[in-house]
Amino acid sequence: MEKEKIAEKKSKPPFRVRLNRKKQKLIMCILTLFAAAAAIIFLLPTILTIANSFMGSSEISANYGIIFAENEDGGKEYIAEKINLKFIPDMVSFSQYYTVLFKSPDYLMKFWNSVILVVPIVIFQLVTASLAAYSFARLKGRLKEVIFFIYIVVMLMPYQVTLVPNYLISDWLHILDTRAAIILPGIFTPFAVFILSKIMRRIPFSLIEAAQLDGAGELQIFLHICMPLCKSALFSVAILVFIDYWNMVEQPLVLLSNSELYPLSVFLSQINSGEIGLAFAVATIYMIPTLLMFLYGEDYLVEGIAYSGGIKG
Amino acid sequence: MKAENRPPKPQRKPEKKIKKKRNIKRFLKSDAAFPYLCLLPSLVGVMIFFIIPFFVIIFYSMVDNPINKEFVFLNNYISVIKNTAFRRAALNTLTFSAVSVPLAVVLSMLLAMLLDSKIPFVSQFRTSFLCPMMVPVASVVLIWQVIFHYNGALNDFLSHFGVEKIDWLKSTKGQIVVVVLFLWKNLGYNMILFLSALNNIPKDIVEVATLEGAGGFYKFFRIKLRYLSPTILFVGILSLINSFKVFREVYLLTGDYPFDSLYMLQHFMNNTFRNIDYQKLSSAAILMAIVMVLIIGALFIAENKFGEDVED
Image (cartoon, rainbow over all chains, first blue to last red):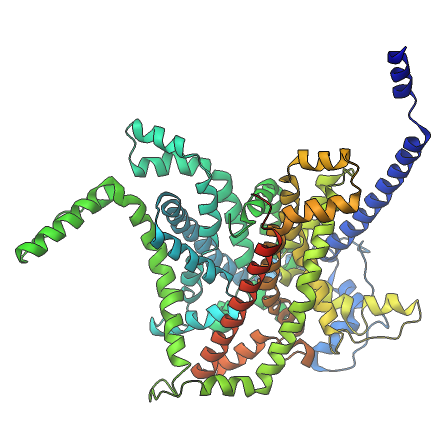
């Protein structure tokens, strides 16, 4: 009898529950719509930039002339009464890309400037940081904790503070106005050390102990145990460091006075005045490396961000 | 191990020193030295480029000029604080941080909870929220200009509702634009931090609370928020640091000389760098460092008080 009753109860959920389910479905729908709206806002500027890069330069100046013509020399060269924000070009054209790639080498030079600044920073920061992280994970004692604390404080300081020491030391070393003035301080930024040492500390001690019993030296432990276990973390740190420096604006403005050496990130802001017709193509080319990294390494990136959470941990 | 196998140098030193040197050498050759040596490259770099010059800056901030080196104690600080441009920049930066940091924390937490609530297409949404972080600011700045210009898309859109044209970038509304840009750029990163924190909340505690009849609000404020508090602290600090970096967006949007309400500390620093006024630079930098340390310390203390009874 009782069992039957229970079975009956299970098969027919009470009215309130059924209503709740409907209500829940409705809530889910609203939440999904909300998330979709937010997602569109987040994606819009990127998509617009890419879409606009496929417009011919006459179409661009017809659409945005009113904004950028003014900037040129304060003149009143109105081309259209209103601006025209469009997703789909009237006619797909690669003329912007053609001009950027084959006719005006200036932009490619600036792109190369960015690469030559960022790649050494990423590589050498990973090398020194993984070594330092290993020693922070292996060593014990008060001194190590003090040093680690100093690293955290340096990491937390904004550019407005750290650029002054950087400028001073670059002046002393006579590397001001050269690429080294940006690359060298970039290599020793403690961010990567911080994340990597957090990850290395999670490696179970028993693993290292077992390796030691088998006769592995410290170098072997580092190379054959810690490094393979940190592979994905290294990749995600590389992505994070890369984006940060690919975006740099403050350092070149302060440390480089020769604008020939400026990376594309700074140069792009000075494009507007003149050649709006190809600015969108340059902007798109500039985001290709980071977008590719994002497409291939999103999971690593998410993992890396998650690791960075929690200063105390 | 092999890296430390340097050939021994010839020695012409008294007995005791030789013994000490040998000990050090033996240690350097031994396996135990490897972790210490690992730290060296990074530590030397940090020392040279950050720590040592920082102490020099403290010295510079207290002398009248680098050649004369006469000790003037706090005079430089006082003149920096009295400087109207510095005040303007500090005020703008602080108001910006005070508005944008809480917004960044709350909104990214809401986004994380949205993605945590079993809606479909979670991974697609995650990708699109993370996208702005991967796109270089310089690349999208053109679109932002098109949107926020006096004759731009936003004013055009608003005019349909009878709103008068607003010059977004060249009026006091400029701060709103920058806050929007800042949130757009940083919410994704913070959201991931909150998502992983939400995942780490012990499931059984939430389940017990549900069985005992706890409502959604109770579960959120009494359980989840407690476990999220270290992440809230971290996201807060991170957003604070990032809010100091917003100069990038402002510079790319408006150049060297923006509207008054967008004049940030980095603009002030850039102008001072141009004049190479070491006294002004160093005292301004140290003032900022002190303020940062105070704010972050206060956040740490607040978090410790709030989350003390939650074991990690």
